[in-house]
Figure 1 (tube, rainbow, N blue to C red):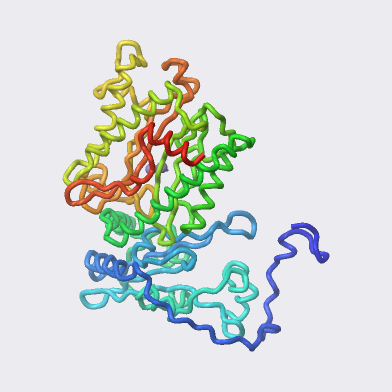
Figure 2 (figure 1 turned 30 degrees about the vertical axis):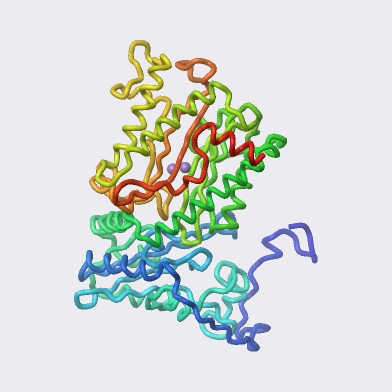
Length: 482
Ligand code: GLY
Ligand code: MN
Ligand code: MN
């Protein structure tokens, strides 16, 4: 901030107002602005998930914090994003989420009483938090905006609600307790760790998210639709991006604008990788130029207000037409992705789609005569092709982009696909610019194609089918938008 009114710099200009004993200039004169909060649409589904937690852990206290604010620099925080397990059990949404909230399942008889401990509104005057409203830049409503009242939160989420300040009371007593750790330092300090019990809770909460219910699938569908809109925006801006020194940043900003407009935020930082940057799997620096003749790999996802996210990748010829070599690589990745998609069905092993995709890649590379180590061909049996593919061909998708990461091998990576699983299929080929094992014309080409799928009772549905996928369709789409 420039010098203004005699104050210099943001910390001077925005320093917290000193606390006043009696409310000072803020005392009295405030209207009652309580609202009637309709139940959030996901609340009924969250109630069922809480019942599942209750059934799994009878007689035990279960504590699931939302997490809190994290400092970005000095007196500014990163935007708040609650833990996905907390979101799953509350259906809390977007900017209504309140840092330092804690969901407590208290055993009662054969079941649990569930209470959400959260921050009430900042009182305008008086009371123990009388100066928070104007004096607390992290939580005061003068600084950060209106929160819901506790009754409003109870109505919106359909849970009992109490003030966070009363949490201590809820954690007392000699009750076996499991905590989702490392999200709330107060809770962690207050409840002695039970490493095995706490680890089991992580696994359970992660596996509870494997099969998505109808509402979650609707949310993912919406997040993917908005992500598709962001890809359209980017194609419309590609020509302009070629005129800028850091065109990748323009691409990133273009997509991110759509994410903020149509959703809550991003599921992950946008990957806008032009030219050889496409060979870096998570190129998020996005500080390079976007040049005609190169490919642009855009891997991006809009996170909806419900916090469910899309995750799509397209690799686009910047000037609208693939070169013969680019198209050869693109077509092979496209064929691999198609083989992976064809392997999606309930009852298939989770690993099958990856194996199917990699078989196409390996055989394709072999047909090109690509023999990275002399006699050893890159076949499906030898895994040398991994030099050019590196990672798996997909992952579960949901509240986290890489969803359900705490699930056990037998329920996820070594498990079987079930109706309601939502996952990505995203094979790629990445020929590093300095890889002497490939012909020069391939060096610096990276291609990934990624779509999002729901497993159904008899197959799979692509949530992102509106986004052109094969090379001809991509060129036609780009020609129409440029
Ligand atoms: N966007 C990260 C991934 O596709 O896994
Ligand atoms: Mn992905
Ligand atoms: Mn992705």
